[in-house]
Length: 329
View 1 (cartoon, rainbow, N blue to C red):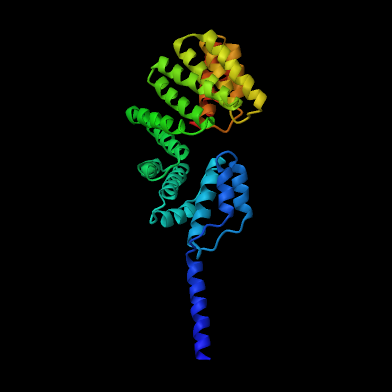
View 2 (cartoon, helix red, strand yellow):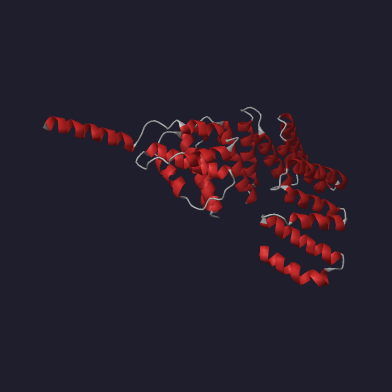
């Protein structure tokens, strides 16, 4: 009897220890990852439908937390807590899985970004980039480089930004053509544009547009056309800039792209303003206010104030517009 009891306890202990740290991933994760890049909304819905693994099942719990953070980020939802990604990072940072470790560090950086802790975010992105040689996923490697490159460009550390965006192109061109290639070309083009190297900027924007046309991606075409319009505006070729600005806006309308429509209107307003067509510029900047982007709102109000001043209307609107500018500053 004692022997039977011993066996029962032994098997129970073995079963419990296996449940503590499963060595096999749940089958659902493979399906979720298969749609993560192209249909992150579906990936998020699948994660929310499946039961969250027990904390005692450390592998699957960490994987669920990591994929949920990734899906949340890819759906442009703002992170408000690092609790989930911390579970993933604590687990995978001690393992030999280079891809999971890099993902954990990268999305920890994304959480820090949304929590307005950019120094910590940059540290995490650097850790993720340092791990690129430990996994074979060119698309994710390109994303890491583009993200870190964008951080350095905002800080005007252009040498490192150029290096990272070129590296991003190197990785993304290793996979089948997709919209990520247009993103990589455009990011490098914008960096050249900020440095007033407009010929190089135009070259990479044209590469971005060519890729978008080859894969028949209208959203990417609109992005690249808008970028080219900015180059023409910086060159002082306002007629060409207006042509490209109108083309971008027409595509945004066709796509019903409400998220980017105000920015397109803002760009058109800038061209009209440069051409001294102030009434047309005013209409565009007023329509650009229909956004949640505070930078767009702030810029639009500032230029609307200047237009009102130039048109001799500033006395009646000065207080109202100035208050709004201060509010969004």
